[in-house]
Image (cartoon, rainbow, N blue to C red):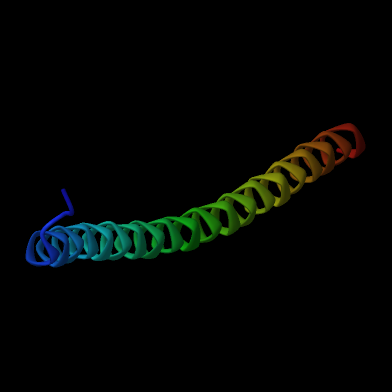
Length: 75
């Protein structure tokens, strides 16, 4: 008994539709991942800026305290 050609075409069409839906979903996921990667990169840059600023402020505070101590000894 040979398979019905119409049934094969119908089943092939369903399968093709499912593959297209999976492909579209994969593309949406990749786009979301790309957006997330960009956000993570921006957050990492921001973290480095904040860490650098905190280091500079700590150095300034340390220098000011040392200067204050030096002035206190002189006077």
